[in-house]
Length: 301
Length: 317
Image 1: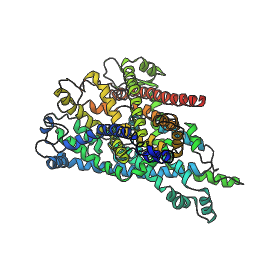
Image 2: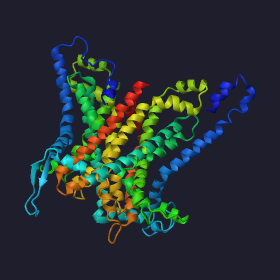
Image 3: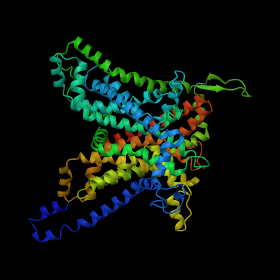
Image 4: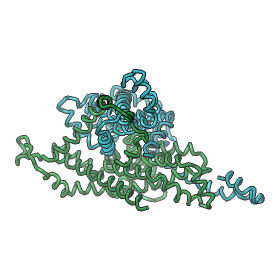
C-alpha cells in the first residue's frame, strides 16, 4: 500500500513523499494486532494440548494450564498411551489409516469416473443425475448412520471393516468436484484425437482423463481422507468391537470414562488426542495448495 | 441448486456435437452409464437405501401390550408419528435449542471469517501465510478431538479459563446450564471459522487487483473498497458458507456428545440427533425415522429458503 501511494503522489508533490507513508502505519499495526489476537484464540487450545501432554495427571490440576509444570512426563505418557489395554491405541491408528486410505482411494476413483462421464458424455438425464448428486451433498450425514446400521445388520456387515468402508467409498462432493475439474481440464479435442487413433473409451479415460485430472483428484482424495479420518458417528454406531474402531471412537471411549477410579487418566487421554492429530497436521502443511484449489472450486461455483 | 449446476457446465458443447449419428450417441450413453455404475451402486447402498428406508419406517408405529411381556408389533400409522413428533415438547425443545444456537453462532462465525479474510486479503498485511495457517489449523483437528480438547478446557477443576476467572475473583463454570449453549457455540466457532475463512479468502484472491486499484484511484477508502467492491463479488462464497453452516448446525451432535462427559447438566435430548438416537435405543425406530425426516426437511427448507431469498434479492439489485 505504501509503495503504491508514494509512486502515485510522488511526481506531483515530491515534498509529501516522506510524510505520506506514515498514515498507513497505524492501520497496519492495528491489523497486525487484531490478527495476532485472533490467532491466539485459535492456537492457544492446541498449545494447551501440547503442554498438557507433557504433564503427569496430578500436574494437570495445578499451576498454569498454558505452561509446563511438574515432572516432564511426555515419554512415560506416550508409553502408557501405546501399551494400555494390550496396545490398542496403535491398532486404532492403523484402523483409521485403513479406513481413510482405503475409503478415500476408492471414492476418488469412483468420483473421477462419474465426474468424467457427467462432464464429457452427452446422454439423457445428465442434468438430473448431477442434480441428485448436488442434493446429496446437502443431506446431513448423521441422519444416514442409523438407517445404515439397520440395513447392514441383517446382512452381517455391522461390526466389520466393511460396515465403515462401504459408506466411505462414496462422496457426492467428490463427484461434484471431479465434474468441474473434468470439464475444465480435459479438452474434447484430445478425447476425439484418442478416438481417431482407435483407443477405447476406458483407455482414453485412463491415459488422458485421469492424467489431466490428477492434480484435482489429489484434492478430492484429500477431502474424503480428512472426512473419513474425522468421522465419528458412523463408526461409533457401526463398530462395537474396540479392535475395529478408528482412533476418534476409541478416544471418546477413553474420555467417557471420566478419569474415575481405574479409568484412563486425563493426561493419557490428552496425550493420545495430541498424538492422533499429528498425521493430519503434517498432511495439511504439506498439501496446502490442494486445499486452496478445492475450496476455491467450491466458492466460485 | 440447479443454478450453480448450469453455471459450471462447460461453455463448449459436449463431444457429441456435430453431425453425430444415432449409434454414436447410443454408444456414448452406454459408456457414460458404465462409468457411472460404480458410483450409482455405492450411492444406492449408502444414500438411496437409507433415505428410502427412513421414509418408509417413519410411517409405522410400534405397539406394545400393556405389560410389555410380548414382543411389540409394528403397525401402519400414516402420518401419526409426524403429528406425535410435532407435538413432542422434548423434540420441539431440541429443535428450538439448535435453531437458537445456529441463529447466534452462524452469523458470529461467518462475520469473523469474512473479517479475517478481508484483513488477510488487504494490501500490506504482514505475515499473511502464518495467519492463514493459524486460522485454518483447527480444521485439521477432527471434530471430536477438538471437542474433546475443549471439554477439558472448560471442565471444572481442569479448566485454565475457570481458574483464571477464579484468580480475579469471578466464579465461572462453563459447564453449568446457562453456559452450555455459549460453550458449544464457541467450540463450533473455533473449529469452523478457519474453514469458512479460507473459502471466502479464495474467492477474494480471484478478484482482479485492477478492480480494487480503480476504486482506490476514485478515492475509495480501504473500508469502502471492502464494502462496495469485494464483499459484493464474494457473495456466492458467503451464500455457500451460510448454506453449509445451516446444514452443519442442524446435525449438531459431536460437540454436545463429548461435552456431556464433563457436563452432567447437559440434557440427554440436547439436539434433535440426540432425540432420534434415544428413540433408536428404545427400539422405537419409526419415531427415530420421523424425527430424522423432520430435521432433514427443516434443514432443507432453511438452506433452500435462504438460497431463494438471496437469489431474489440479488435479482432486485
